[in-house]
Length: 181
Image 1 (cartoon, rainbow, N blue to C red):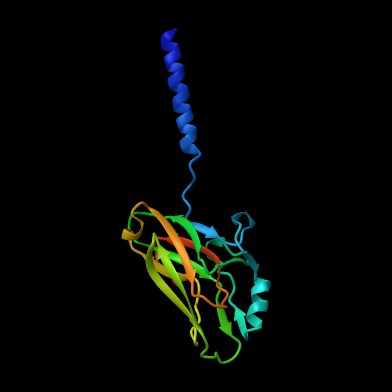
Image 2: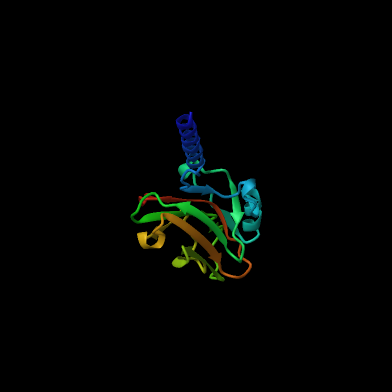
C-alpha cells in the first residue's frame, strides 16, 4: 500500500513537471508588430501614407518575407522599443528589421538626417541613417555576433533620434542566414 502511494506521488510529480515544461513558450524567432494584443502605438499603411504624402514621400510596402505582411506597424517612441527574440543557434545570426521605409516623390531634399540605434543585449550593434538624401531599403539585416546573445536570448532595443520623424516597424525576425535582397 505504501509503495503504491509513493508510486502515485512520483507519477503525479512527473506529470506535473511534464505539463510545466510543455507549457514553456516555444522559441520566438519573429515578431509581427502592429498586433492589438501587443499594446503599442499601432499605425496602418493608410495613416503612414498620409504622413508621408505631406512630406512629399511614398511609403514602401510591408515586406512579404516570413508571411508577416499585414500592413500594420508600430511607431517606435522616442524612448525606444524593446522586444525579445530567441537565437536560432549558438553562432552568429542576422536580425532583420522590416522598418517602414520611404522614398521621395521628387528629388530628395538634403534635409535633416534621422537615425535609429539598434542595441542587442545592451550593446550598440548598428546605427541606421535616413534623410539627407539617404533612404533605408528594408528589411535591414543586422549582424548579431554570438557574444551578443550568449544565453540564446536576443533582447533588442530600437532607439530613434529625437525629433519629428516618424519611425515605425512592420516586423522583425532573426535568422542564421543572410538572405538575398
